[in-house]
Length: 307
Image 1 (cartoon, helix red, strand yellow):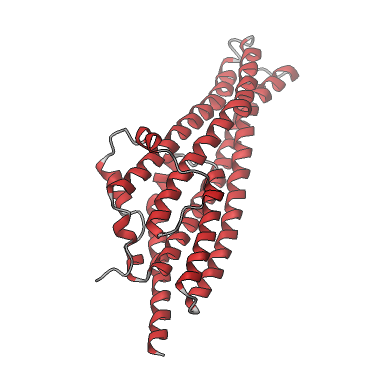
Image 2 (image 1 turned 45 degrees about the vertical axis):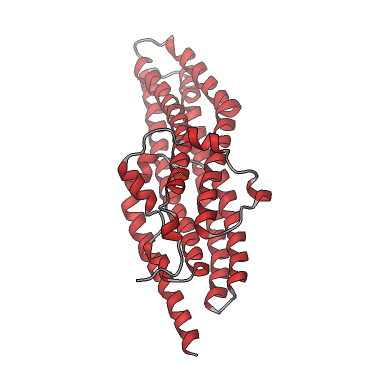
């Protein structure tokens, strides 16, 4: 089969693979920071609940540590994470705009990541498995239709894949954290049942609850934003099926890409272990959806050719 666009060929080029690998490492640094923060917000109350019966004097110190962790999150970690998210989004944006044949929108995304920073981020050795995954980033089926259509199918894949992943993750995160917090509070009260220690137990779990509630809200807000992007895609896709010109579809894709970038630059992180656990299911769904939209495009193009 002869490709009618070069998205799948472009994405496999070494410089493109390097962009995604740099993006991976940028997000990985942010996820490690978040992981350590979550570990300590969970570890402190668990230690407090277990130690309260043996060393009740330890509780005030642990409560103070928890509050300091909360202040550190708001004052420093949050700002650092936002910078990393923005850089990772720019690296993905550069990959997409090159693969899709779209111009870089400096007004929305600002300057590209400096080559020196890309080199630094991508300096770690890349596993062969990850290289293969990046080289086949977008579905092969998109190569069967003209660029204006294949580009839109890829954009829809980005939107839908992310939305489904985040909704599942956000709901699971909230449930697990709530159960842990309740267990810690009950254990703390049962082991040392007085009002002061109950308040200290609450103070110890407050950073974990604050993070989980904030993260849950962010994930759901992000899903709602992605639903709006789905609606925008449907508008452009309907125009495509009705025979809009390639230039009109390119303008629509550029506007859609602007919204995708803004989403990526502000969306909360999802831990890698969550991503890999859900990956097989999400990729099967993405493959089936891409195939369906490619068929819609082929049918519309075929009908116009026959007319």
